[in-house]
Length: 192
Image (tube, rainbow, N blue to C red; front, side, top):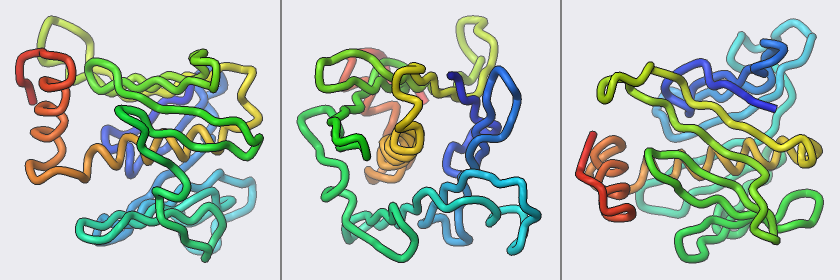
């Protein structure tokens, strides 16, 4: 399954199935930008406006000074590090199935999700700017192996936090911080 992000800001985007073109998830940001809510749309008419309809999946509370928090059920917050642990250059989590998975960065802002046996189960293609090398501009997309579709919510939520955490950390801001991190990690020239 391939889910395409509809906006360049993954923190305020929809995820649409590439095959059916049906909306699968919405990600919305509150007014101050520090809270991201993920929902799965339903067929019911919206009750609180277009940004708040659908089944609640998760919410991130992003902080600069204190620990980030996550709600995996409405109104039950826990520190992100209790849900997703940093292990070297990876962020690991245990899915609802009880199995452990790990996200790690790849070149150009991409990310890979591997299971306990280091088998790739999902891959996030970061958006491309299309500015250099004649490549066509494209939005971010998440490809998920059909064998793990039963934990799709876990994969989407962990993927979004993995990317959002990288964007809001660092004193240099998103593009400069990501460019610097990639240059250090992969020994590539600094680019923004």
